[in-house]
Image (cartoon, rainbow, N blue to C red; front, side, top):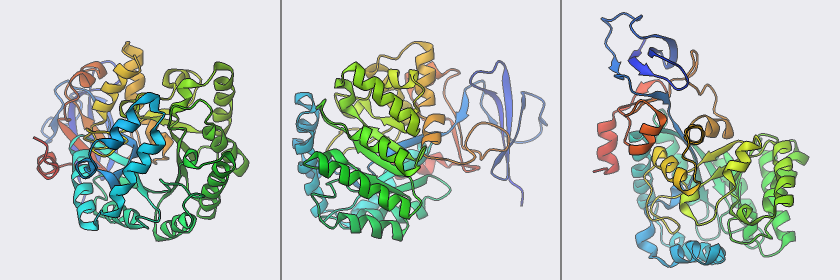
Length: 410
C-alpha cells in the first residue's frame, strides 16, 4: 500500500520562496513551489518554517548514558580541570561504573536516550560501546539489541570501542573481534590511552587489522588530553593511507590539536586530507577542542557530536543536535551567518558523509529523513533549539508525543 506525507509551505536553506515536499513510500518524491500540489491532499503545514534534513550524531557513548549519579563528580573534575592534564585519570575513574552496570539498566537508559533523539529529530547515531576486561561485550550486546529495537526510528551504527586500551588491556583485541562477529558495525579505538608510543602504534595497527578483516569503518578517540606531544591522529591517518582506508576513518576529539604548533598542524592537515579523514568535535564536553574553523577552511569534513549524556564526562545532554550547534557557536566563536550555516552542516550533511549514510539529503529520490523546525532561518532555529514541529524518520512521521513521554522530557 502506497504511503504519502505532504509538507506544505516549507522554507528551504539557500532557496528563495516556499515549497511543498511530497514523501511517498519512504522517499522524497517531489519538491515544488508552494501551492502546486493538490490543495485537497492532507499534509503537514510548515507555515513558512525551515525544513531540512534530519540530524546526525557521529559520537555518542550510548552504553554510559545516565550513569553520572553512580559515579559522582570525581571524573568530571579531572577531565575538565588543569588544562585536561588529568584526562587519563578521569577515564580510569570512570571505568569503575562498568563493574556494576546491569544489562536491564543499560537497556532502559539507552531507550530513554534514543527516544530523546527521535523527539529532537536526531535520526542517525554512531554509538560507542566499551569492550574490555570489566564489561566484556555486554555494552555491544545492549547496543545491538537497541539497534534492532529502534530500526526505522533512530538508525544506530554500533562501535565496538576499546575504551581502556588494547596493549594495556590484554584480551581486548579478541573482544573486539568477537564484537564484530556478533554484528557490530564499526571498530573503535583510543590509542593515546596506551603508555608508550610503540603501544599507541600497535593499538592503531590492531584496530585496522580487525577493520580490514571485517571490511568495516574505523572510529578512534584521539589525543583527548592537554598534551601537545600526542600524535595519534597522525598515526591513524597514516595507517588509513597505508591500508587503502581513505574516507573510512573518523577521528573523534583530537583536543591536543589546540596546542599544536602551526607548522606541525599544517602538515597534519595535509595528511588528513590525503587520507580523507573526517573529524568530529565535541567542544561542549571539554575545555579544549579541535581547531574546527581551520580544519573546515582546509576542506576537512568536520562534524559536531553529542558525545555524552549525563555520564562521567558531561553532566547534561539530551540528543538535541541544535543545542549542540548552539553551544558550539559560543565555544568556537562562530556566530556570523556563514559560521552558523557551517555549524548546521556540521549536524546534518557533514556527519552523514562522515559515517557513510546512503540516500541522505533533501533531494528528490533520497530517503525521507526530515525535520520541520521552529523558525524560518538557521539562526532562529539555533537561537531557541526547540524540538522540531515534526520529524520524519526513514519515510515515516514520528510520534513525537510518544517519544517525549518515553524520554521523560518535561
